[in-house]
Image (cartoon, rainbow, N blue to C red; front, side):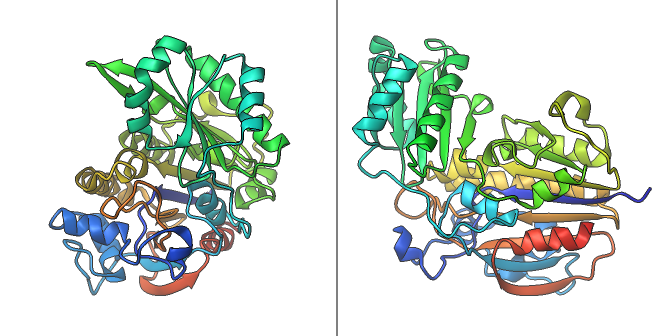
Length: 394
Protein backbone atom coordinates (compact mmCIF):
# COMPACT_ATOMS: atom_id res chain seq x y z
CA UNK A 1 0.00 0.00 0.00
CA UNK A 2 1.30 3.50 -0.88
CA UNK A 3 0.38 5.28 2.34
CA UNK A 4 0.19 9.06 2.00
CA UNK A 5 1.40 11.13 4.94
CA UNK A 6 1.40 14.78 5.96
CA UNK A 7 4.20 15.62 8.41
CA UNK A 8 3.93 19.05 10.04
CA UNK A 9 6.81 20.46 12.09
CA UNK A 10 6.13 23.75 13.87
CA UNK A 11 9.23 25.65 14.97
CA UNK A 12 7.46 27.45 17.79
CA UNK A 13 7.64 31.25 17.46
CA UNK A 14 10.01 31.44 14.46
CA UNK A 15 8.21 34.39 12.87
CA UNK A 16 9.74 36.26 9.94
CA UNK A 17 8.50 39.85 10.10
CA UNK A 18 5.94 42.14 11.69
CA UNK A 19 2.35 41.90 10.47
CA UNK A 20 0.77 45.17 9.35
CA UNK A 21 -1.29 45.33 12.55
CA UNK A 22 1.71 44.78 14.88
CA UNK A 23 0.95 47.98 16.83
CA UNK A 24 -2.52 46.68 17.77
CA UNK A 25 -0.73 43.90 19.64
CA UNK A 26 1.75 46.14 21.43
CA UNK A 27 4.67 45.25 19.16
CA UNK A 28 7.24 47.25 17.21
CA UNK A 29 7.85 47.36 13.48
CA UNK A 30 11.34 45.92 13.97
CA UNK A 31 10.12 42.56 15.27
CA UNK A 32 11.39 39.82 12.98
CA UNK A 33 12.40 36.79 14.98
CA UNK A 34 14.29 34.88 12.29
CA UNK A 35 16.10 37.89 10.79
CA UNK A 36 17.11 39.37 14.15
CA UNK A 37 18.29 36.04 15.58
CA UNK A 38 20.40 35.48 12.47
CA UNK A 39 21.91 38.97 12.78
CA UNK A 40 22.58 38.63 16.51
CA UNK A 41 24.52 35.42 15.90
CA UNK A 42 26.47 36.84 12.94
CA UNK A 43 24.72 34.33 10.73
CA UNK A 44 23.34 30.84 11.27
CA UNK A 45 24.54 27.59 9.73
CA UNK A 46 21.38 25.94 8.42
CA UNK A 47 22.30 24.10 5.22
CA UNK A 48 19.11 22.04 5.12
CA UNK A 49 16.69 24.93 5.63
CA UNK A 50 18.79 26.87 3.14
CA UNK A 51 18.49 24.25 0.41
CA UNK A 52 14.73 24.13 1.05
CA UNK A 53 14.55 27.82 0.17
CA UNK A 54 14.25 29.54 3.56
CA UNK A 55 16.87 32.13 2.63
CA UNK A 56 14.84 33.11 -0.44
CA UNK A 57 12.13 34.52 1.83
CA UNK A 58 14.18 37.44 3.16
CA UNK A 59 17.59 38.72 4.16
CA UNK A 60 18.70 36.26 6.84
CA UNK A 61 22.37 36.51 7.65
CA UNK A 62 24.08 33.18 7.00
CA UNK A 63 21.09 31.64 5.18
CA UNK A 64 21.83 32.10 1.50
CA UNK A 65 19.37 32.70 -1.31
CA UNK A 66 19.69 29.85 -3.80
CA UNK A 67 18.61 29.34 -7.41
CA UNK A 68 17.79 25.63 -7.13
CA UNK A 69 15.90 24.95 -3.88
CA UNK A 70 14.46 21.49 -3.29
CA UNK A 71 11.17 22.66 -1.75
CA UNK A 72 8.31 25.07 -2.21
CA UNK A 73 8.70 28.13 0.00
CA UNK A 74 6.50 31.03 1.04
CA UNK A 75 5.30 33.39 3.73
CA UNK A 76 1.96 33.15 5.51
CA UNK A 77 0.08 36.04 7.10
CA UNK A 78 -2.23 35.21 9.98
CA UNK A 79 -5.97 35.71 9.61
CA UNK A 80 -6.80 35.15 13.28
CA UNK A 81 -6.73 37.93 15.84
CA UNK A 82 -3.91 36.71 18.03
CA UNK A 83 -0.21 36.01 18.42
CA UNK A 84 -0.26 32.95 20.62
CA UNK A 85 0.39 29.23 20.32
CA UNK A 86 -3.24 28.14 20.43
CA UNK A 87 -4.45 30.62 17.82
CA UNK A 88 -1.55 29.86 15.50
CA UNK A 89 -1.84 26.08 15.67
CA UNK A 90 -5.62 26.14 15.35
CA UNK A 91 -5.31 28.22 12.18
CA UNK A 92 -2.65 25.86 10.79
CA UNK A 93 -5.25 23.13 11.28
CA UNK A 94 -7.93 25.18 9.51
CA UNK A 95 -9.69 26.96 12.39
CA UNK A 96 -9.58 30.77 12.13
CA UNK A 97 -10.22 32.69 15.36
CA UNK A 98 -11.96 35.98 14.62
CA UNK A 99 -12.28 36.89 18.29
CA UNK A 100 -9.03 37.35 20.21
CA UNK A 101 -8.54 35.49 23.47
CA UNK A 102 -8.81 37.62 26.60
CA UNK A 103 -5.72 38.88 28.40
CA UNK A 104 -5.40 40.06 31.99
CA UNK A 105 -2.86 42.89 32.31
CA UNK A 106 -4.03 43.59 35.87
CA UNK A 107 -4.22 39.97 36.95
CA UNK A 108 -7.27 37.74 37.14
CA UNK A 109 -10.53 38.93 38.77
CA UNK A 110 -10.95 38.34 42.51
CA UNK A 111 -14.10 36.30 41.87
CA UNK A 112 -12.15 33.79 39.77
CA UNK A 113 -9.21 33.61 42.18
CA UNK A 114 -11.50 33.11 45.18
CA UNK A 115 -13.29 30.24 43.42
CA UNK A 116 -9.94 28.72 42.50
CA UNK A 117 -8.73 28.86 46.10
CA UNK A 118 -12.00 27.40 47.34
CA UNK A 119 -12.21 24.52 44.86
CA UNK A 120 -8.55 23.54 45.10
CA UNK A 121 -8.24 24.00 48.89
CA UNK A 122 -4.80 25.48 48.18
CA UNK A 123 -5.22 28.03 50.99
CA UNK A 124 -4.24 31.05 48.92
CA UNK A 125 -2.18 32.12 45.93
CA UNK A 126 0.87 34.28 45.30
CA UNK A 127 1.37 37.00 42.65
CA UNK A 128 -1.67 37.15 40.29
CA UNK A 129 0.19 39.56 38.03
CA UNK A 130 1.71 39.50 34.53
CA UNK A 131 5.28 38.31 34.89
CA UNK A 132 8.21 36.51 33.36
CA UNK A 133 7.99 32.93 34.63
CA UNK A 134 11.63 32.54 35.57
CA UNK A 135 11.68 35.92 37.33
CA UNK A 136 8.48 35.42 39.34
CA UNK A 137 9.53 31.95 40.48
CA UNK A 138 12.89 33.23 41.71
CA UNK A 139 11.25 36.19 43.42
CA UNK A 140 8.51 34.22 45.20
CA UNK A 141 10.16 30.84 45.76
CA UNK A 142 10.93 31.53 49.43
CA UNK A 143 7.37 32.69 50.15
CA UNK A 144 6.04 29.70 48.22
CA UNK A 145 7.98 27.40 50.53
CA UNK A 146 6.73 29.23 53.62
CA UNK A 147 3.05 29.23 52.64
CA UNK A 148 2.79 26.32 50.17
CA UNK A 149 0.61 28.63 48.06
CA UNK A 150 0.89 28.22 44.26
CA UNK A 151 2.37 31.05 42.22
CA UNK A 152 -0.32 32.20 39.76
CA UNK A 153 0.64 34.59 36.99
CA UNK A 154 -0.15 35.61 33.43
CA UNK A 155 1.56 37.47 30.57
CA UNK A 156 0.65 39.53 27.54
CA UNK A 157 -0.75 36.27 26.18
CA UNK A 158 -3.99 34.62 27.21
CA UNK A 159 -2.58 32.29 29.85
CA UNK A 160 -3.35 31.30 33.45
CA UNK A 161 -0.04 29.89 34.68
CA UNK A 162 0.48 27.96 37.91
CA UNK A 163 3.99 27.34 39.23
CA UNK A 164 4.95 25.11 42.15
CA UNK A 165 8.07 23.39 43.42
CA UNK A 166 7.14 19.76 42.91
CA UNK A 167 9.36 18.71 45.81
CA UNK A 168 6.90 20.71 47.92
CA UNK A 169 3.62 20.23 46.04
CA UNK A 170 3.17 16.92 44.17
CA UNK A 171 3.04 17.10 40.39
CA UNK A 172 -0.36 15.39 40.33
CA UNK A 173 -1.70 18.10 42.64
CA UNK A 174 -0.42 20.79 40.28
CA UNK A 175 -2.12 19.10 37.34
CA UNK A 176 -5.36 18.81 39.28
CA UNK A 177 -5.22 22.51 40.19
CA UNK A 178 -4.77 23.29 36.49
CA UNK A 179 -7.82 21.21 35.60
CA UNK A 180 -9.82 23.14 38.20
CA UNK A 181 -8.63 26.45 36.72
CA UNK A 182 -9.54 25.28 33.22
CA UNK A 183 -13.05 24.33 34.39
CA UNK A 184 -13.60 27.66 36.15
CA UNK A 185 -12.35 29.68 33.19
CA UNK A 186 -14.66 27.80 30.84
CA UNK A 187 -17.68 28.01 33.16
CA UNK A 188 -17.16 31.74 33.63
CA UNK A 189 -16.62 32.44 29.92
CA UNK A 190 -13.27 34.08 30.64
CA UNK A 191 -12.12 33.26 27.08
CA UNK A 192 -8.63 32.27 28.23
CA UNK A 193 -6.60 30.23 25.77
CA UNK A 194 -4.47 28.12 28.10
CA UNK A 195 -3.85 27.07 31.65
CA UNK A 196 -0.19 26.11 31.95
CA UNK A 197 1.34 23.89 34.63
CA UNK A 198 4.80 25.29 35.41
CA UNK A 199 6.55 22.75 37.66
CA UNK A 200 10.01 23.56 38.97
CA UNK A 201 12.62 22.21 41.35
CA UNK A 202 15.57 23.70 43.20
CA UNK A 203 18.64 22.62 41.26
CA UNK A 204 22.07 23.80 42.42
CA UNK A 205 20.31 26.24 44.72
CA UNK A 206 18.27 27.86 41.93
CA UNK A 207 14.58 27.44 41.03
CA UNK A 208 14.60 25.64 37.69
CA UNK A 209 11.55 24.88 35.54
CA UNK A 210 11.14 21.24 34.49
CA UNK A 211 10.16 21.38 30.82
CA UNK A 212 9.26 17.71 30.43
CA UNK A 213 6.57 17.99 33.12
CA UNK A 214 4.95 21.14 31.75
CA UNK A 215 1.35 20.64 30.62
CA UNK A 216 -0.99 22.99 28.76
CA UNK A 217 -4.75 22.84 29.31
CA UNK A 218 -6.18 24.62 26.29
CA UNK A 219 -9.68 25.76 25.61
CA UNK A 220 -11.31 23.12 23.44
CA UNK A 221 -11.45 24.14 19.76
CA UNK A 222 -14.96 25.53 19.08
CA UNK A 223 -15.12 23.83 15.68
CA UNK A 224 -13.61 20.78 14.04
CA UNK A 225 -10.19 21.05 12.41
CA UNK A 226 -8.41 19.14 9.67
CA UNK A 227 -7.20 16.81 12.44
CA UNK A 228 -10.80 15.90 13.36
CA UNK A 229 -11.59 15.39 9.69
CA UNK A 230 -9.04 12.60 9.36
CA UNK A 231 -9.48 11.13 12.82
CA UNK A 232 -13.20 10.77 12.04
CA UNK A 233 -12.22 8.88 8.88
CA UNK A 234 -10.23 6.37 10.95
CA UNK A 235 -6.82 7.84 10.09
CA UNK A 236 -3.88 8.01 12.53
CA UNK A 237 -3.19 11.55 13.79
CA UNK A 238 0.01 11.50 15.84
CA UNK A 239 0.77 14.49 18.09
CA UNK A 240 4.37 14.98 19.25
CA UNK A 241 5.24 17.55 21.91
CA UNK A 242 2.43 19.75 23.21
CA UNK A 243 0.14 19.19 20.20
CA UNK A 244 -2.42 17.19 22.20
CA UNK A 245 -2.54 20.00 24.79
CA UNK A 246 -3.01 22.75 22.20
CA UNK A 247 -6.00 20.93 20.69
CA UNK A 248 -7.32 19.68 24.04
CA UNK A 249 -6.89 16.16 22.59
CA UNK A 250 -9.45 16.88 19.82
CA UNK A 251 -8.57 15.26 16.51
CA UNK A 252 -5.66 13.26 17.96
CA UNK A 253 -5.35 9.46 18.01
CA UNK A 254 -1.80 9.05 19.39
CA UNK A 255 0.23 11.49 21.50
CA UNK A 256 3.55 11.75 23.29
CA UNK A 257 4.97 14.66 25.30
CA UNK A 258 8.57 15.75 25.01
CA UNK A 259 11.11 17.37 27.29
CA UNK A 260 13.18 19.05 24.58
CA UNK A 261 13.38 19.78 20.86
CA UNK A 262 15.98 17.00 20.57
CA UNK A 263 13.50 14.47 21.96
CA UNK A 264 10.72 15.80 19.74
CA UNK A 265 12.87 15.55 16.63
CA UNK A 266 14.04 12.05 17.47
CA UNK A 267 10.46 10.92 18.06
CA UNK A 268 9.43 12.51 14.77
CA UNK A 269 12.11 10.53 12.97
CA UNK A 270 10.83 7.35 14.63
CA UNK A 271 7.27 8.20 13.58
CA UNK A 272 8.44 8.69 10.00
CA UNK A 273 10.62 5.57 9.77
CA UNK A 274 8.02 3.38 11.51
CA UNK A 275 9.95 2.59 14.70
CA UNK A 276 7.81 4.67 17.10
CA UNK A 277 5.88 2.43 19.52
CA UNK A 278 2.39 3.63 18.60
CA UNK A 279 0.58 1.13 20.78
CA UNK A 280 2.06 2.74 23.90
CA UNK A 281 0.82 6.24 22.97
CA UNK A 282 -2.56 5.40 21.43
CA UNK A 283 -5.67 6.91 22.97
CA UNK A 284 -8.27 4.51 24.28
CA UNK A 285 -11.45 4.02 22.26
CA UNK A 286 -9.73 5.00 19.02
CA UNK A 287 -10.50 2.87 15.99
CA UNK A 288 -7.99 3.09 13.15
CA UNK A 289 -9.71 1.85 10.00
CA UNK A 290 -7.79 3.64 7.24
CA UNK A 291 -4.06 2.97 7.06
CA UNK A 292 -3.71 4.56 3.64
CA UNK A 293 -3.23 8.01 5.21
CA UNK A 294 -1.49 9.46 8.27
CA UNK A 295 -0.77 12.82 9.91
CA UNK A 296 2.29 13.45 12.09
CA UNK A 297 2.17 16.81 13.86
CA UNK A 298 5.18 17.99 15.90
CA UNK A 299 5.67 21.13 17.99
CA UNK A 300 9.24 22.17 18.81
CA UNK A 301 8.80 24.49 21.78
CA UNK A 302 12.36 25.27 22.94
CA UNK A 303 12.78 28.20 20.55
CA UNK A 304 9.82 29.91 22.22
CA UNK A 305 9.85 28.70 25.82
CA UNK A 306 13.56 28.55 26.57
CA UNK A 307 14.91 31.31 24.34
CA UNK A 308 12.30 33.67 22.89
CA UNK A 309 10.61 34.46 26.19
CA UNK A 310 13.99 34.76 27.93
CA UNK A 311 15.50 37.17 25.39
CA UNK A 312 18.20 34.62 24.65
CA UNK A 313 18.99 35.23 20.99
CA UNK A 314 22.14 33.10 21.19
CA UNK A 315 20.23 30.09 22.50
CA UNK A 316 17.50 30.69 19.91
CA UNK A 317 20.07 30.55 17.13
CA UNK A 318 21.59 27.36 18.51
CA UNK A 319 18.11 25.79 18.62
CA UNK A 320 17.45 26.61 14.95
CA UNK A 321 20.80 25.08 14.02
CA UNK A 322 19.96 21.97 16.04
CA UNK A 323 16.63 21.62 14.21
CA UNK A 324 18.46 22.02 10.90
CA UNK A 325 20.90 19.25 11.79
CA UNK A 326 17.99 16.88 12.38
CA UNK A 327 16.44 17.91 9.08
CA UNK A 328 19.54 16.37 7.54
CA UNK A 329 18.23 13.04 8.88
CA UNK A 330 14.55 13.70 8.15
CA UNK A 331 14.74 14.81 4.51
CA UNK A 332 16.13 11.49 3.19
CA UNK A 333 13.18 9.70 4.85
CA UNK A 334 10.59 11.75 2.92
CA UNK A 335 9.24 9.79 -0.04
CA UNK A 336 7.04 10.82 -2.97
CA UNK A 337 4.05 9.83 -0.79
CA UNK A 338 5.06 12.14 2.07
CA UNK A 339 4.51 15.89 2.36
CA UNK A 340 6.82 17.54 4.89
CA UNK A 341 5.62 20.95 6.08
CA UNK A 342 7.84 23.24 8.15
CA UNK A 343 6.34 26.41 9.56
CA UNK A 344 5.80 28.49 12.73
CA UNK A 345 2.82 29.69 14.77
CA UNK A 346 3.74 33.29 15.72
CA UNK A 347 6.84 35.28 16.65
CA UNK A 348 8.78 35.76 19.88
CA UNK A 349 11.63 38.03 18.93
CA UNK A 350 14.27 37.84 21.68
CA UNK A 351 16.00 41.02 20.47
CA UNK A 352 13.15 43.53 20.91
CA UNK A 353 11.85 44.99 24.20
CA UNK A 354 9.66 42.69 26.29
CA UNK A 355 9.47 38.94 26.79
CA UNK A 356 6.15 38.21 25.11
CA UNK A 357 5.11 36.86 21.72
CA UNK A 358 5.32 39.15 18.71
CA UNK A 359 2.68 39.53 15.99
CA UNK A 360 4.51 38.17 12.95
CA UNK A 361 4.01 36.43 9.65
CA UNK A 362 5.64 33.00 9.38
CA UNK A 363 7.63 30.99 6.82
CA UNK A 364 6.27 27.82 5.27
CA UNK A 365 8.27 25.14 3.46
CA UNK A 366 6.75 22.16 1.63
CA UNK A 367 8.89 19.20 0.62
CA UNK A 368 8.19 15.88 -1.04
CA UNK A 369 10.62 13.71 -2.97
CA UNK A 370 9.22 14.67 -6.36
CA UNK A 371 7.80 18.10 -5.55
CA UNK A 372 8.17 20.94 -8.03
CA UNK A 373 10.33 23.56 -6.28
CA UNK A 374 8.94 27.08 -6.53
CA UNK A 375 8.19 30.28 -4.68
CA UNK A 376 4.67 30.50 -3.29
CA UNK A 377 5.01 34.20 -2.54
CA UNK A 378 3.00 35.59 0.36
CA UNK A 379 -0.35 33.96 1.13
CA UNK A 380 -3.09 35.08 3.49
CA UNK A 381 -3.92 32.56 6.18
CA UNK A 382 -2.07 29.86 8.08
CA UNK A 383 -5.10 27.76 7.13
CA UNK A 384 -3.65 27.40 3.64
CA UNK A 385 -1.64 24.61 5.30
CA UNK A 386 -4.85 22.76 6.24
CA UNK A 387 -6.08 23.15 2.66
CA UNK A 388 -2.78 21.81 1.36
CA UNK A 389 -3.05 18.77 3.67
CA UNK A 390 -6.58 18.01 2.43
CA UNK A 391 -5.42 18.33 -1.17
CA UNK A 392 -2.48 16.02 -0.45
CA UNK A 393 -4.27 13.32 1.51
CA UNK A 394 -7.57 13.48 -0.35
